[in-house]
Length: 297
Ligand code: FES
Image (cartoon, rainbow, N blue to C red; front, side, top):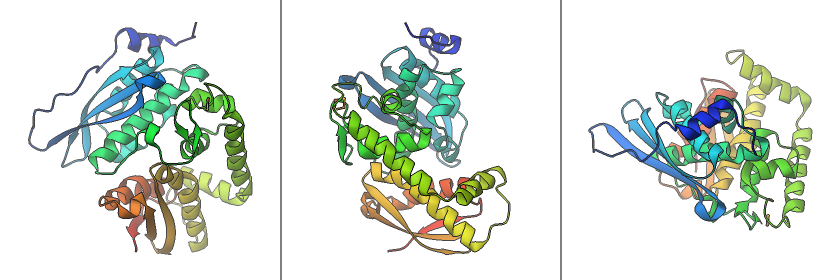
């Protein structure tokens, strides 16, 4: 028997915002949904968003979930968390935020919070015209065939949640939780991420933390470029790679960050939305609020 918090049980027995959102073709309003998971894998979530087009703000949200107690509670929590937020604010919601809203989730059920975060991202990217692959079609190297989980997706969850064991990866994305033949590969990915982390100079790691705490502090040009490069490598590229795209830093000119987009991002007609949504907002948050991003060919 799982040890669920009262909040989890309450949202399971009395879920808020369950069902589809009707699209009444209201002027100035868009209704979209993002979908993740599959019933074959045991969990599936469709997250609906009602968005005010002019302000880019989420007016309402609802969910349809096939899954366990924590999947339903996580989905319901997410709909409460996103209401009233701008889309850029909503993109900052992490799976840890969902778990915290619920007063915590059993470790083995963290994949439910990850599913929520991915559905939110899928809905927003869909609204912005950015293609997001369902995980079973994920184009990265397939690591776990039982659950259709790619290397890119495992790297992302390891980085974002500081995971250190294959068991934790199973808890967060289910990979490894079937036949177990992929566990060695998962351990190799964790080791590679840790090696990359260790290669990060301690001074630079401290800089990132300091900048996050004091977003307006002055940075030298070298510090700024190093931080931008680090955030692109550690936080942005894993997301784009998971969708078959990639980004490279081309130049930094004052607050203007020039990047090249390749793969699916380079050919995507909505690459501007990709830049604004997935790259610029992350650099503003992590490095300097005044940064803006432009693509070069
Ligand atoms: S291949 Fe990953 S659990 Fe079977």
